[in-house]
Structures are given as structure tokens and as C-alpha cells.
Length: 301
Image 1 (cartoon, one colour):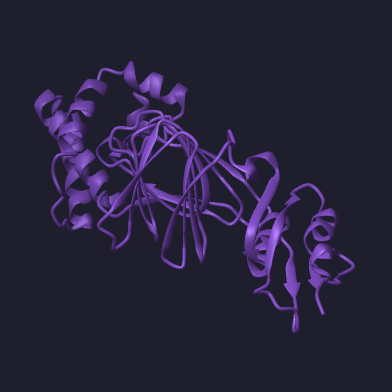
Image 2: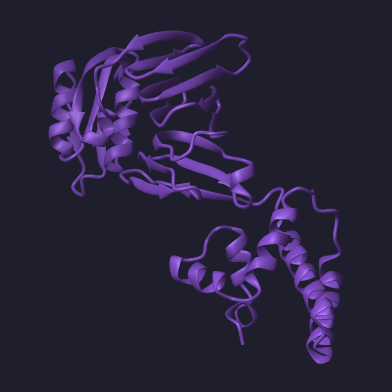
């Protein structure tokens, strides 16, 4: 018995691009692979109609049983085709998505179906359609991520600030509550701001910063994002933004009643030592602080 017959999840995982290299290699060697691949290819061209999933599943099982009993290749392949259609319907091709999330103090390396790689910073989320990646290479980003795109054709990143169309290979996007930053490290990217008619084309060392709906084009000499070097850098940023980033990187909480968090800060902090980070940011601002015993809460005046 072939594995796709004994493993009920194999076809669904194959369509989703989730088979291991060993499983995929074994599946490609099976007599049925070519037919499955052809049906899957054709299925991508159509939108699945509404399906009574329960009745369709019952019908498919009956067809498969009948196909095996009669040993008729036509009926068997018809049953297989129906099975794929049911699998596609059950998982909800048009709406099913896959998400990757990072918590405070956490980073995550993600490999997309085409081999493109994304490094997610703390407190970030990346989402993309679960099926038919080659027909829709759009991902949705909340937070911050560094992208190294394998094939740029059609690859795009949607954010709340706008869309980044990938014409090249390596770039970083930071999208937080009040700030959007886009840095291009290799190749070319295009930024279409939400509700704006003008777009920006960025090449190596170009960056765009959006704050309070104002777009500023800048130059950078960095070869990769500072956060991937274990460093957070700020240039005339509100202290609230600095505190938010310390919380993300160290999984801590600030408690404050009187400190003016709108004051601007220029400087940086490292991600490898909390107390050093606090001294680097709060001490220059003349702000005293107290750490809780478990070092998870920072009390400000």
C-alpha cells in the first residue's frame, strides 16, 4: 500500500507544501504522483464552489471503495481526483493561512515555500496563504522582519502602512504603532503607501521612514539591520518608543506615573544585558529606576 493511501494527512500536507524532503521524495517516486500533480495544477486555476463537506466525504469514500473493488483505473483516478477536491475544500483554500509569531524577547527564522527566508524580530507576526504559494506570493507583516527573497517575481509584503513590492532580494521592514521603516540592502524594492498616489523605488542603502504620515527618504551605510546585530538604535525618538523596544527585547514591563515619555532620545542599547540597556537609555535622560526582584518589572518615578 502506498503511503498516500495509509496516511490521510499526506495529500493535504503536500498541497500545503509541508512535506519533509524525505516524504516528498518518496511521494514523487509513487505511480500516482504525476496524476496528483496534474490535478493539483488544474485545481489552482479554479475557485472551489460551496461544498456539503459531509456528503462529499461520504461520496468520495464510496467511490474509492468501489474503485478498489472493481479495480478500474478510470474509477480509481476519478476517486483520487474527487479526494483532492475534497481535501482542498475541507482546508478552505481561499481563506486558509499560515502564521508565524514571536513573543517578547524572541526571534524566529522562517523559510517560505519558495525558499525565501524571513528573520522575525521580537513581537512580530508573519502570515501568508497556506496553499498555492506560486500563485500568490503575498505575505502580511506586523512588527519587524528581515527578508531575503529567493525569487522576486510577484513577491510582496502587505503592512498597515502600505505595500512593499519586491524587485530585488534583501530588505528590512519595521512596522510598529507609530512608525514604519523600510531599508533596502540588496536589489530593488517598491513602496506604495496606503492611500497615496506616489510610490518610492528603493535601491541598495536607500531607506524610507514614515512617521505621522510624513514620508522621509534617507541613506544608510549599514549592511544589515541593527537588531540582527543585537542592537537597537534611536535618533530623536520619543522615550515611549525606547521603552517599548526594551520591553520587546527583554520581555519586561515598565511601570511609570510621572515620567514624561514624550521626551526625545538619541542613542542605543544592546540586547544582551538588561541592566546595561537601562543604564544606556534611562541614565542619560536623568531617570532613576528600580528593578523588581525577578527582574521582570522596571519601576520609574
